[in-house]
Length: 195
Ligand SMILES: [Zn+2]
Image 1 (cartoon, helix red, strand yellow):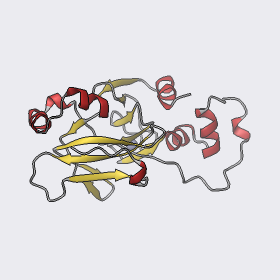
Image 2 (cartoon, helix red, strand yellow):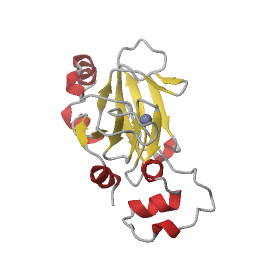
Image 3 (cartoon, helix red, strand yellow):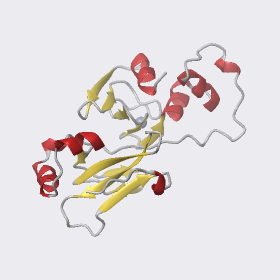
Image 4 (cartoon, helix red, strand yellow):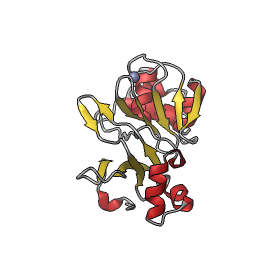
């Protein structure tokens, strides 16, 4: 079972960000706050902006069901019978990969971002192909602030097509750092796209 199927079976959701993300109407399994949990439909991960918690499919199911990591894996694989008997992994529970994405809007909602891309010769075909969106807010996770405002968000994928992070391209040209990154993989494995 895909994470999205698990979510839609257990929660009521609405589709946001051009249908690329699910917004949970129900409570966050980590903090109990409602209405602030976003889950990427392609990258099987998400973030709660109430408790600033980023998560992958496995850690979300662990929290939601109160189960161990191998049990959560079994649930995600569709094995709903007998999973309670699974032993804890020998490598421990904390190697769940999770990547979160900042909240974004479609690029056409930002005339500045569209002008930026058009000026560099990038059209709608490129926007669609690489899943480019626009972020107009900074994100704080715990005590770290990610300066994502006014950046074009470019998803990064591994060779298997899994989202492994993102880069945010500043369009204001006011920042010394043209790009901000979130990635947990070796960038040489990523399909990095520069705009
Ligand atoms: Zn939360």
